[in-house]
Length: 104
Image: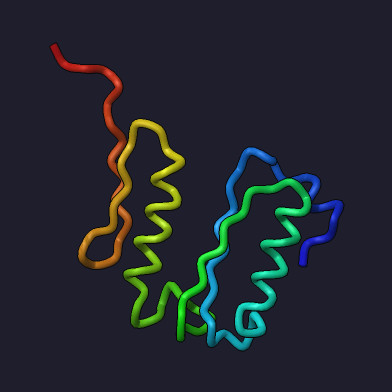
């Protein structure tokens, strides 16, 4: 866990996404991520936790990784103005910034 002094240095404008699998022994089967989420929230930071049933520690390399990529893309996509973030069939993030200028 990050010390209180280090947490105070984090820009309060950023959003933190915490991901974990319910079968992750490294993160105490999700308990450590829940604690981290509560700790960040208690210290006035915005954090969101997504827990994946039956996944282990490396959720980005799990057999159901496409769902994780989609959740990450949705999380980031909500926070980017005038842009679109999607996941292709191979699970790769595709970022398309929309041109603010309209062609005449």
